[in-house]
Amino acid sequence: MKIGVMGAGAVGCYYGGMLARSGHEVVLVARPAHVEAIERDGLLMETQTFTERVRVAASKEPAALLGCDIVLCCIKSYDSDKAAADMAPYLKPNAQVLSLQNGVDNAERLQRALGRPVLPAVVYVATAMAGPGHLLHHGRGELVIGESPGSPAIQSMFAAAGVPVSISDNVIGALWEKLIVNCVYNGLSAITQLPYGRIVQGANVLPMMHDIVDECVAVCTADGIRLPGDPWENTETIARTMQGQISSTAMDLARHKHSEIDHLNGYVLARGEALGIATPVNRAIHAIVRLLEGR
Amino acid sequence: MKIGVMGAGAVGCYYGGMLARSGHEVVLVARPAHVEAIERDGLLMETQTFTERVRVAASKEPAALLGCDIVLCCIKSYDSDKAAADMAPYLKPNAQVLSLQNGVDNAERLQRALGRPVLPAVVYVATAMAGPGHLLHHGRGELVIGESPGSPAIQSMFAAAGVPVSISDNVIGALWEKLIVNCVYNGLSAITQLPYGRIVQGANVLPMMHDIVDECVAVCTADGIRLPGDPWENTETIARTMQGQISSTAMDLARHKHSEIDHLNGYVLARGEALGIATPVNRAIHAIVRLLEGR
Image 1 (cartoon, rainbow over the protein chains, first blue to last red):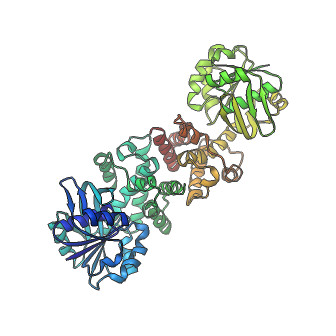
Image 2: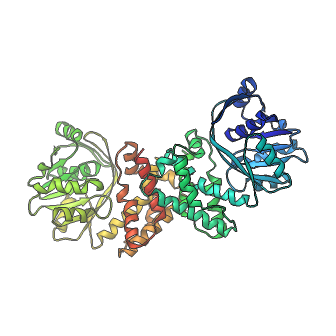
Image 3: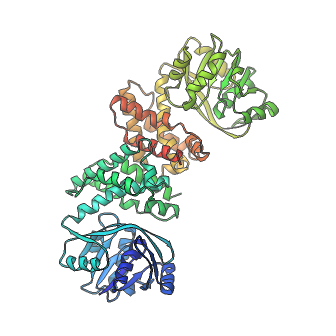
């Protein structure tokens, strides 16, 4: 089985690295600095259970995806359309594309752009790149994927690589569930550059977070989405279990990079507008993060 | 007429300086660095119409207010209660105290703490301290004061010093009108460290500002307050006329100082809670500024 990772940042390097380590042929399509380091020294994986240099192919060019049976798309949401166009010429007719991305509509957008089914995956992992070709894994790693003829085989492949995957008949609900947590924490952590455990201790922060959750729930309910769990319980759990965590949006802003905020609170705002649901606090978070991005 | 200024920062130095310049005996109660500079070199007033060193008394001690006929209280809102306690022993029985402060309830709080009438004043001036004893005046300077037996005399005194004062039968409405503009701009400018003209150009910023205004209007309407003007029109005017302006709250945060946010969006939130009016966007702004203050 040849597996390609499109956009191998921290998430892509983790899953690609786990699969390479279990014996699959894997190629990481990544930024030049990562490619050079990985070609020279392998992918340094510092995980919660092992530290290892994993030999894996890497390339700057999407053409490296040629011949892949499975492609994991780990591109930032704002680059999904470009990624689709870049990948399209090199995909085998029967290659299975998975979207391992934040936001809820990436699989749909890739599917539209590629003209083929794309399997959505909800990613629960805390990872970061410590430097070129150097992956840090802080915890978790499980995936939830949608139902499809190929899903059981994908589940087995990941299981053999030490990645627990569950198949859900409500993956869109699971994507929304994760989106809501992202809407609560990502923007606030970006604006304040504070970790989750500090944020929740602030005056009036919990009621504000409740507003964000309630607005998201109103939008997804109006959108016909059924949430698998209790989103407020999830929000509280994150504060307890990821106290020291800074959001990816916070890291993007700290590095003066484009963030995914348009696909987090901005998505809720846009869906809310389409459905006639007011989302004032999500709008405020979105507007403030955009102002900070523009500085 | 002996006039005292309690808490002579940029606002207090401006009005105290204008009155001293017109021949009144004025004493500024200020921070040590300002007092030393003013005692040595006078108060350097760099205004839009003149630059002048004004001879004026200055002291670190509230005891210097002894014998004052009029005391202008220019203390930050969060220090009103302490200021009242500090001033109280030195006030003549018939001294007239004016509150030249942001927020809407300072005169009321001073009045309660001092056990004597305090005249509220709405301050429209753009000033800043450029350094010890060095005042910059960027524009405006007019006051709106409440009705009282002494108000016409105060109006004349200021008029003779080049400070236009109007007497209003709805000074609480005028205070709320200013509060609303502060609720719109102060927090956002603090969070982003951007000037007003830049902020209003951000994506989704104007609708968010409209949310803030609408929430404030709902609270003050429920509180029985009549607004003299159109608060949204005021908000738009500020964006046009004060494009380069950074808020006092932004300066406080940049200097790691305590801000007045509890008396701006925090006040609207508290009044809203007391009156059963939801103020989610004011709450979000308040919570975020408090998080930034606590970093």
